[in-house]
Image (cartoon, rainbow, N blue to C red; front, side):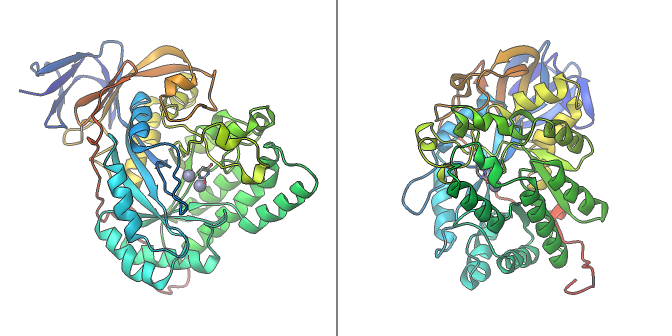
Length: 467
Ligand code: DUC
Ligand code: ZN
Ligand code: ZN
């Protein structure tokens, strides 16, 4: 007897939408077909889409800082807001503090994540690639299932020099990890920021002035060039503008293993939002650009230059974002719950992308790039039964309360969307029904990742060196 049978829905299976039943047993999808016998629980999905649970491979959750503080979303509140928005799996970030190692942080962070309800994997941030870290500790955490290293080319005190970045690329190549990169030029932003502050231009809107597209384009070009030098696959995070996306397109055209990510904020928010009285609530990096950039980003999504859409969820309360000059306001916005509704509405409901493209962008491709596929990101026999029942017609006006996250603001307040998750199943368990989260804290599983082909080096460098 099956645990759950979902009937009468339009199922977004790997090969495209089909009308069929979905049978679940032991937390996995066991069959797609017609007239599957009743299970212990039968869910009627008439009028609904049956979609793979969202995989959000870029979320900042409960990241501890050296001073003992940590980002405001806990793994429990992150799980709640994720399930509300139809996301069932996240990849979040283990910090490294300069002057410290990574093993202790991995152990601590793994215990924190175990308190939540989401299935979860980790990126390891590298800010200080010393011999001990790269030769001893990173191999240890890779053996524990961490298969992606995250680096920043900007931010004090996170950014790496080119030499340090090359070292991370080289280590990742040896260990079989993906390298994910925040691409903005640190020195250029410093220069612009000092000029703006000296001129008394301190308001949130000057955040965008301090880091224009050329700053992102230059760092993206450099990140790709050095990855090509080392022959190491990379993913460029949160692409905000066509200029940076064009660098990725050129790299792909040359056959390099370079993937691009964008986020809902880059197709829904603009730099003008930061000029509002509550402008700080729209501040993230890279910043939202001019309104005409949205169509260009959609085009880069359609062409396959940008492979995944994540939230870059990084939640701060209004008080934490108020009262400072733009250079000290923490960067980041919450988006775990809003990601799928915004992309479905702006993408599928408005005819910019198909339902298959939507599922690929928010679930299948992030799962593939993170080495979680086919366990996650697809509705297919053998995969985990992470499923969202989606009402494609429901119109919703987004409010902060609806997001059910830990903070008192959402940059998407008041936006209208068409399409909304009605229920979320994680490994076959209904963890959200009509906005009510039902999962028990501590029920999320750690996803240890093993070596995966997608991030194997190509085995060629421009001149054969080291290949
Ligand atoms: N940008 C980042 O790089 N990280 C967190 C939030 C943000 O806006
Ligand atoms: Zn970033
Ligand atoms: Zn981020």
